[in-house]
Image (cartoon, rainbow over all chains, first blue to last red):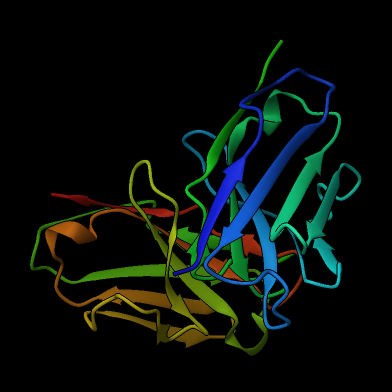
Length: 119
Length: 108
């Protein structure tokens, strides 16, 4: 059964870089069928698609975040990662990783991890 | 960017009643690439409907999706207690993918 698990610091200081990793188990991240994505949800608010990546490193990013976002993949570790630079309090959110298509979040999600931006 | 507007914001119904949730797009959604997600408190969203009308694994047939172009509907034919949650629509036909603001389905 496919499982995704987010990991990373729960607290990041303003202006620093948020870094999260999603570890995939029960399936290969090298499958050519899927894209691997990040979605976030500020506390009490709705969902925002951040971007996605496939096994070969092809990426799609939300233009609203593109200047600050990097998504990468490590097929040897069955992991993919998110980096968001120059964070502010507005980046405080639960961050989810998911398996889907280029733009669709899909059916398999991690449990989510809360990242708070605060000094 | 395609803006999705969901209505109503909150829907108060009783178990056994029929629920109709709307998702309207600011532009036509390509190839009916429209999904619905169900989210319960403290949980990740669960894919409910994809391709506007295909039901995802694990959801009973009281859930159905319909629509095309700019108007989409999620219908729950007869509400069960476990159906009360927040429902989001998402379009994935053009970049960036976007979500609606959500409809909260609450027990009356």
